Amino acid sequence: MYKNGLRKKLREAVVSVLPIAAIVLILCAVVTPVATDTMLAFIVGTGMLIFGLGVFAYGAENSMTKIGNLIGSKLTATRREPLIIILSFALGAIITIAEPDLAVLSDNVPHINSLVLKITIAVGVGLFLTLSMWRILHGFQLRIILIVSYVIVFILAAISDPRYLAVAFDAGGVTTGPMTAPFIMAMGIGVAAIRSDRNAEADSFGLVGLCSVGPILAVLILGFFYKGEEGIISAAEAGSYADTFELSASYVKAVPHYIFEAGMSLLPVALFFLAFQIFSLKLSKLPLIRILAGMMFTYTGLVIFLTGVNVGFSSMGVILGRSMAGGWKMYLLVPVAILIGWFIVKAEPAVIILTKQVEEISAGAVSEKAMNAALSVAIASAAGIAMLRALTGINLYWFLIPGYAVSLILCSVVPQIFTAIAFDAGGVASGPMSTTFMLPLVMGACQASGGNILTDAFGCVALIALMPPITVQIMGLITVLRSRRAETVPPESFADDEIIELWEV
Image (cartoon, rainbow, N blue to C red; front, side, top):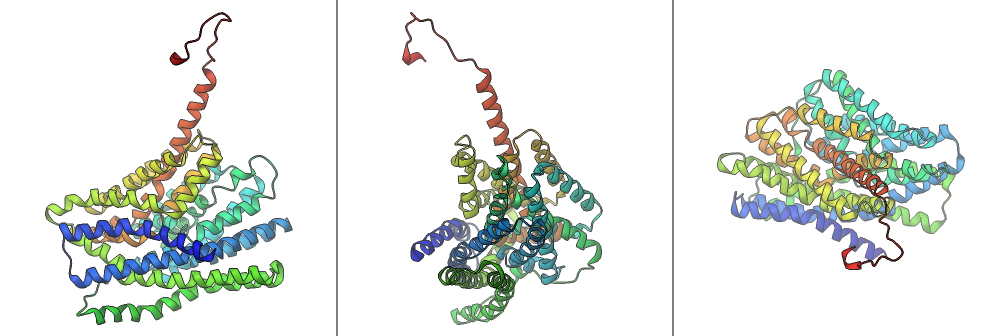
């Protein structure tokens, strides 16, 4: 059973990463050759990314998701709202710090200390997970909270430091990755079980979408108080290697750093779980061992993932973006970004899970195939727009304001379940591949074309998180209109003695 589960996760990781790697290899072979050592570093990094992501996902499924379910169920049994609220904040903050997507983003933000950024974003997620749980307990409408939250976001954005704007919206996308999203969803389902009304199941959705708002607000507020500092972009540190021994040494040297970083990320989660186990859960020996083993898989996968991403994989994105930003190659950047965006969303494990849930909840009215197609178009378009911004310097506001305006207007005309799923889709679509390759690619192109990375390149993940709320709610609107049209069309009637030609019906 364990081998089959790990094999499945490794296959998903291969499907997720390999199309992007293939596109890169083709570009390097045909359009813009790179140094042999850089290519070799990328290949090694790709292998580590695939293996690390697969092991991490397997471990998270067998530990983090189960912990979320157990804690959610236990909190439900207490029926003590203050306890649920307090623990929701703590868990939201703790689990966010362990998110690998956040680790990658924080290493690539040059003007904010990595630890400061992580803590700020974790507090934002914790606060909005608390708000989400309160909403589930009281059945408060999601659309009202979303509208009020985004009004506050854009008021703050209008008066905030421009260097923090794009980073803030990107932070909202990366926090709901392979670690955080399953955990939050599991908790929501457990807490929703308190209620017995017909809307309880629908209200368990929307947590990921709401938790994406918290980091945006937190980083924007940080910009008013944090002076900023000079720093470097981790992905841009693409070294050259004299031989394979030196290349191997670069990976070996990086491992201790990421062993420590991954340990510090997961330690709060482990300590919280053990404390909860001692004082409340009291699991028997076998389930406890399985969860602890899952946490070890999570830790091992996270170390391998971060090492491969930071040493070889993300650096290739920056190098490729730089080398293609001049001459006739520049005209290929937007189509390449669109192509990569198409493959990114089709392979995200969290997206696969969400599309299946949508088909089940809509009783087949919105098929998994249609949902995938809508999300693929959305993310491909977002990736193309992000690259266009990097090359031209178009202000991010020109896309965020009308985009969220359309999303929030649609909230009032589609069923609440579609709104919840739509904003959840925005969170899960901006997964590991968006942060580890698409963002560095955009950053490299921006840098080579003379743009400002902080204002023109960052915002890529934000655009990827923006598009699904629009496309999924439009699908919901179409579904509603079709159902209404079907109700208004009277069934055709025939006389008792009339002959019915079946092939004409």
